[in-house]
Image (cartoon, rainbow, N blue to C red; front, side):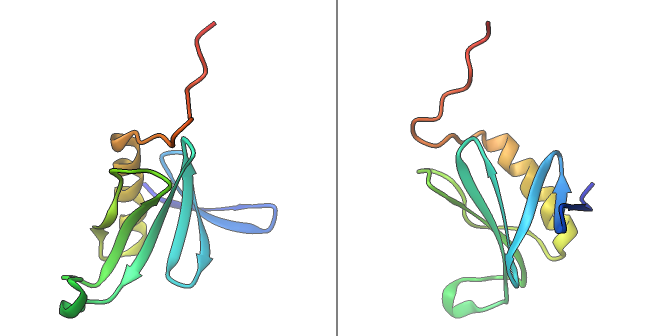
Length: 102
């Protein structure tokens, strides 16, 4: 379940150990395995194929990621859904290698 967290005067939204930071109004970002993910609030617009008003997930720096996938209509539900989707996809940026077990 998503919750608000404050650390060193910054406020975050956190779900499943991912901290989503507000970058500008209507956008939140997080990073995992060298990939940046962004949640963006979009309004229904049939001209640009936005079917519903709500929060959409995008990924940067990786091929085959998310591009405008609808998460939820409300922010906290979208944070939960996006965190699950990010972990399930397990995308890794080019050059990112997990540390070898000792």
